[in-house]
Amino acid sequence: MSIIYLQIYFVTIACILGTGILGLPVTLYKSGFYPFLISFLVTFVFQVVLICITVEILQRSCINQFLDYKESLDEDLHDALQNKKDESESSEDEDNTHNHFITSPNLHMLSEMFLYNGVRHIFDFLVVLQLSSIMIGYCLAGSESYSGILHIKKVYIMPVYVCVLSSLIIFALHLIQPIISLLTLFKGLAFVLTVIITCIIGFKIQENVIDDYNYIGNSFLMGTVALGGTTNVMPFLYKDIVQNKTEIRKYLLAVLSALTTCTILNISW
Image (cartoon, rainbow, N blue to C red; front, side, top):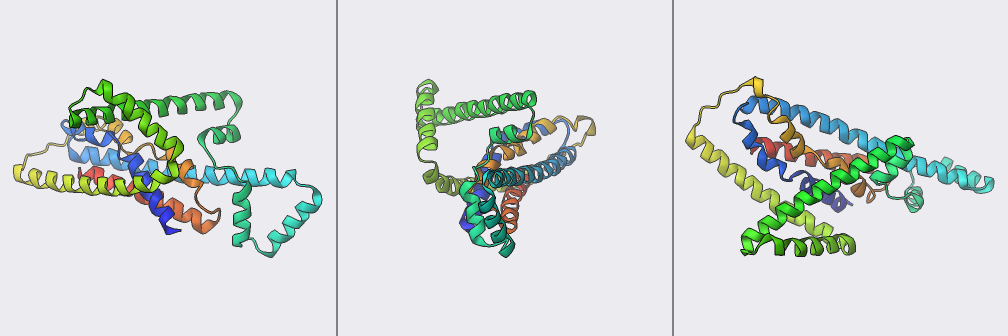
């Protein structure tokens, strides 16, 4: 069971550590470090609140499905389930029964469940637009990277890159999820090494940094990009856990730990 939460931790880190982190130092040349630190910590606090709210929404979606399921049963079966619930509310068998008929939550299902018609369509459109822009960004960045490594024009790399990775996600998601966790571990270690080298060079240069709070907003947008994206992947990760208080707390702890790790790495970088 602990392996699931370890995967959640690393997959969340992989989601957060995107291209935004590379642009952070560029946004600091006017504001300085401490104005950036204040705005970045504010972003971190709001991300924590957003994650907690998302977990609450995911729980309510499962509860609503459970209530709908109970209403669809006839009276005798409803009474039998109620008696079983009175005997043991927290038994593992009941959790497994709940997981049997509860559909895995996703962003579209959440909009169908909690939003009105007009707002629901706007939300779905914005989600598709956001995810499309993220995927286009990853496609361009990944193709550019492999183009530089292999010395091949990115026009030829891009179709292969997109087709191979899309096929893996569609047909072999459960197989590549542990691999993503392992690769994220190596990615994090490489990034930590980069941060250490950067700090050593920074101490040797001893550049005087001037803090100007008039430019505190310069790095705010890039900071939100560097810590954002967690809620997009949370419903996908939520489906693997058992629906009880202890497991949900472990899930929340894994996601918050990943966010905290990325925050520390971003600040160090």
